Image (tube, rainbow, N blue to C red; front, top):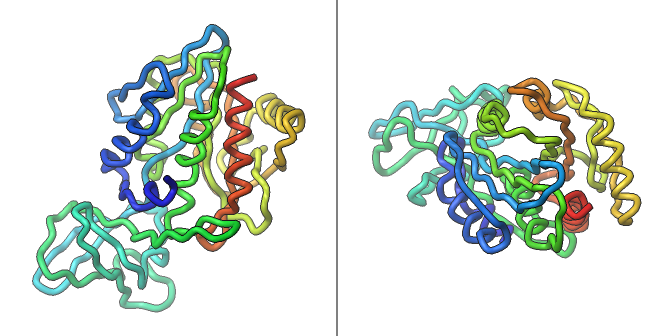
Length: 293
């Protein structure tokens, strides 16, 4: 399944195919599913206890065509997307057409330096994402977009393994998360009153071990939620550690949008486009334990 997820292109605003795949995997394992007005995909397992949101994003970085002539394509991208991540790599359009992204510069590459040759003109506004070239090793999954796909994989597998839940669990696959958490911002303003929200993401980290984040660039995560997750992991024999990051996961969205909600962040480490399979399984078991508590 992780190979399939990596191979489904899901640029921000173009997540339809990956939503279809998620529905096909989960509709038999939940009580209700629906899309909200922003396109977030929400599955519910009914219960009488606290209302808990478990969330991950489903989009991935992209380049958008701004110019198309007989020779080259030119691109734009959201400000936070690093142009060097696309340089000298194969990318594909939604119809499967592949192009090689090249750069006019070798250092300090900007999106304006990127171009691609294409046999036919493309429409302005079309998006390309990296061809993942997925590989499964003895201990790792690897792909150019693995950091964006592995949280989806973890959440799908965790939902399938849940045997019982007293809480009312909302599993949210949010759109346009790469664009400043737009989908999550819409969800937090929707009027659904969550008692707590836990986001699943990934982080570049050389050491193995699932991280329960205490702080990220934009905010301090709710201490009570962090302590609760760490205590639960110890009870279940799940290996986790406390993490700090200067990366902005946008978690203040949970704390400040709408009525605000207590929030936690679980991160799966990756390095050089690879994740450790044991970390993936630990993250799945942790999400399952949170809901079954």
